[in-house]
Length: 455
Ligand code: GAP
Image (tube, rainbow, N blue to C red; front, top):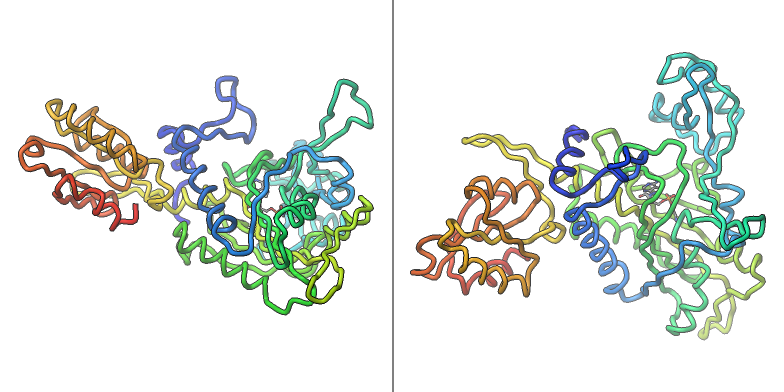
């Protein structure tokens, strides 16, 4: 994607979308806060996901589980044993890298996901892959570095008080699968969705909000009988694509679909497909769809000694459900949306930066403006009326051209202006963000106009 990420970051900061975390203290590496407008977009994005994957899906229900779980959960899930990255240090300049990423950055077609430490080390030497910082080829041996964020709970800090911040929201769902199924009397197939914070002590966070140590996930665990012949993997892949293209309007040409090869699969996965977005810094995973088989339920059944099987009332059989999981990071999706929406446009009378956000994700749907001071009171009354049904903002500072630019910069789809004639003809001018065309309509037709525009 052909935009400069630094320009986007600076725009998002100046307009109140994304700020550097802890900025007044010099910041905290790779932490980002969402300003007033960013928080709006994020909230709207999460609601669209929840509506589509949970509330308005015939099979699914939603849940909200804790960030800190009993540590046995992470033994059972395999995270305490397997959730590691291969860490390597440059002996010369002391920079730290992920060995697999060093290779993949140079050989973009290679997939080294399943390689052993020895294989990675030998390849780095054989191919003369040098330190990207100082250019030397003098690395330490690889050490496996756990991504789990460790902390302790309670007054006494000892072995028994160690807890972890969850690295995925999925495990909370598996742990509460049986309770949810029983309480809601759900029959297979059914899914449980969750949105929430996850934490990973990433070795190489970066690329703005693409990879951070604290982030939010939107995950669905869809449970079905092992004998069920429906292609649920394809079903959920189609749903994800529909959500991307139709609900949040990601352009087809900006993403691609990649099937993982066997060596790359995570410890729990039987099959995985990634939707990759063409970010300004290269292609990167946006959304993963995984077949987790009955791995998690089996592990939790064994480690908790609780029966997590499903009793099938039709066949009178008991079995563990299989699982398909579509999982996406909120901030990563937000970054894709920001990248796609950010446009610098040349105009006859200058230039503008416009955020062509999907209408449903724009912080404000409409801006109400008096052309001059004389219409301020009337515009304020209209604004308060519109506020009852729309996400509206009032803007009366600067000349009208400046105000249009300001609203373009934050992605407001429509500006409604009252002028000298409004009092006489009861009309306003509506300006369209994308076409910049203006139309004069009756005040009582504003609702109809906005309805036609899907606001
Ligand atoms: N439960 C499966 C799971 O967590 P994953 O591929 O590790 O799978 C799923 O993560 C999604 O979460 C990714 O596709 C990405 O969108 C997001 N994600 C993962 N790590 C992230 C990070 N460090 N920062 C931001 N988003 C991340």
